[in-house]
Picture (cartoon, rainbow, N blue to C red):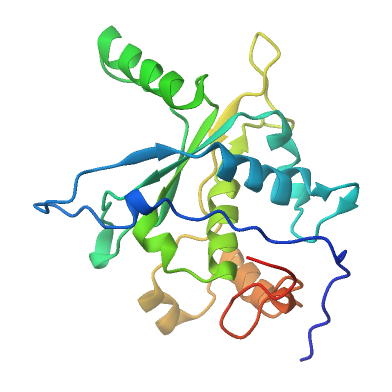
Length: 227
């Protein structure tokens, strides 16, 4: 199937934020490489412009996603780290979205987190998205964009029984971490296929016209402008 490229203004460039050199060496358990945690306001601004606001000099960017309309009100901080965060099966986590408000621990533990967030971001953000620099540095432009969108999809606004957005007593959005649309093991799908509705929806999405793929070359690198 031939995929047509979206209409994109000539001046639009991906301008992918670079991973800081200081977090390019992976800090594994027992290694001599010191752990690093670096906030990146530039990355936060890039993600907001590209995916949430979706505009550049009045032109609608093809990366804009209406699913993130609620995030126009959210304060989102981005962190780079070189600390390895292992998952099951020997995998290492490339990114993670969190609400930086500890619900456990004593007053000191909670205050310490609040203090650290304010030191990094100036305020305590509604969400913090952490990216592992050494892993992200090896990603193609397309994979990097997909990873950032994946973490943004976790940044949600809670809804009531009627599906309406929830707000706090102060009228602020009540934020939450959205789970994955699909939770399954590849070994199970290999045996039973798309056995429930969420898996069927995922399979259907893979057969759709992926409008952003045409903006990248066969190696996943941006070809609509400069990196």
